[in-house]
Image 1: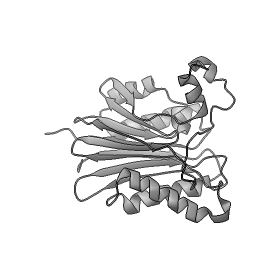
Image 2: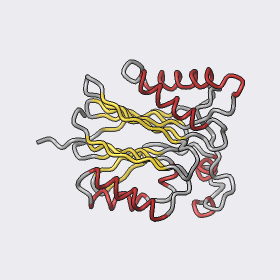
Image 3: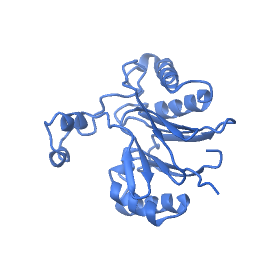
Length: 235
C-alpha cells in the first residue's frame, strides 16, 4: 500500500460546524490507515468527539491493535467529557491495509465499501435501531424508509465503555477501491451509482470528484464525508 492513491471530500450541511472528521495515514512499514468519525447530531459535543477519535487514531495507530485503539478512544472521550458525559458521542470506522489484507474496526453507522470491478460489498453493519428491526423481520426495507427513529444509533463511542466493536478482515487485489462514507453521503447516493461511476472513472480523483458533484446536485442535508483508497496495480 506504499503507493496507494487517496482521494476525499468533506462537506458541512450549512453554516454550522462540520461534525465529521477523517484521516488517511501511511506508516514506515507500508501499512495505511483510513478512518472516519461522524459526531452524533443529538450530542452537544459530537463534533469534538469525532475529532478526538480521529486524533487518537493518528497518535496511536502505529503502535496499537484495532481493539486497543477503540479502547483508548473511549477512555479519552470519557476524560474529555468529564461532567458532560452523554454529550460527547461519535461513530468511528477505520481500515488498516497491510500485506494484501484490510482490517476493519467499526462502531456506529458510517460505512466501508469494498469495490472490485462491477462488484461492491458493504464491509460494515449499520448499528442502528432500524437496521435491527429489519434483521428481526419487524420492518421491511420499504417500511423502514418511513420509520421515525431510523437515525437512532444502538452503539457509539461516548466514553461509557458500552460500544459494540465489530472487527473483520478481507483480502485486497490490485485495482480494488475501499471507500469510507458517512451517512450524509450514502443516504443520497445509491450503491449501484457508486459502482457505475467507479467503473467509468479510471482515476480515483475523478471518481471521488464525480461522487461529490452528485451529492451537491442533490443537496447536502447532513455533513457528508467520503474517503477512498485505490490499491495500486502492479506494473
